[in-house]
Image (cartoon, rainbow, N blue to C red):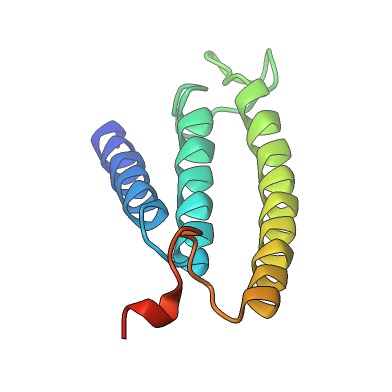
Length: 112
């Protein structure tokens, strides 16, 4: 179980970094989203993965820590808002410049 979670966090981080290094705005936004998913899984896994363990003291022998669950829920809301703001900025940049490239030093018509 721990190996699967660790591999999932590693793959999400690698995909997020790869997408953030692209030259278009939409893959960069997807890369940020994948990185936020990786951070959410990391925070959730930091609360000791235990099966059938309630976060209430006294109901089971080893209760889980409810703090990482609360942090993940907060991070999901924040990442949703961040993604919406970045998408609006990318759409505005696309409408203003006529393209969605993120390298500001070159004109996209010079490549042709």
